[in-house]
Image 1 (tube, rainbow, N blue to C red):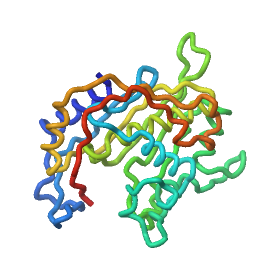
Image 2 (cartoon, one colour; image 1 turned 180 degrees about the vertical axis):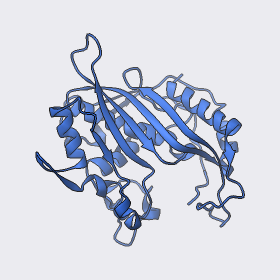
Image 3 (cartoon, rainbow, N blue to C red; image 1 turned 90 degrees about the vertical axis):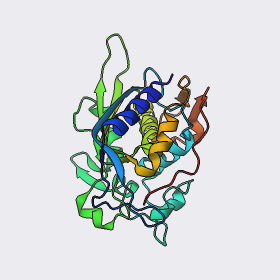
Amino acid sequence: MSYADTLFINMCRDIIENGTSTEGEKVRPKWEDGSYAYTIKRFGAVNRYDLAKEFPALTLRKTALKSCMDEILWIYQKKSNNIHDLNSSIWDEWADEQGTIGKAYGYQIGVKSRYKEGMMDQMDRVLYDLKNNPYSRRIMTNTYVFADLSEMNLYPCAYSATYNVTKKPGEEKLTLNMVLNQRSQDVLTANNWNVCQYAILLMMVAQSCGMIPGELVHVIADAHIYDRHVEIVKELIERPVYEAPKVSLNPEVTDFYAFTTADLLVEDYVTGPQVKNIPVAV
């Protein structure tokens, strides 16, 4: 089975069996019918995925990997906050009349800051340091900018990525690892989506810098299952599981800003049926 399946099943069972409920408490999200959307939650979920062993896609149900990549390109490559630059409708609900989601996500990645080497935005700085000072312990991006929160249509959920380089014995190339920090996550709808997104980002950055993708460590402060999702999750985690798919990038692309979704190569991705009609709390 895919190791991502194992981690997901264990996390969901832990939330359901050992989590705490927010029922009756003051919460922000509501269901479409106007009732409050309560959750069962666990504080501080931490999962480790080793990309050197396999790509962390669920097989319990299919994760749309090219759509995952499209959104990550929207944020970190296009540095956009406009849904017209995105090939899906997942952000439409938070967009204004001009199509922007405010000063969120890609907007923050594209903000330039002054360094002794010159003016650079967050992603350009990551690429510069990995190529010129790979053992720096300061290589990261952060989209949770307090001064701009009031101008964001949604506060960032997955808000920081910290890059760290290691050298495996006998390996010529350096290994690039990442810690993804997430303040909150709707586990059913978003967990594997975010994992696959940042696994792909790690792969692209590593290939751009002549490195090997290594570990992705995913830290979730508030990992929760919504009350109307519990029975769906219980059914999902009892399904058959399969081997992880083979996922790679076009080896000819070595410029981070040249990648497109056509460069994501997916083979042998066998999954269970998609879960349909999942209610979404807003």
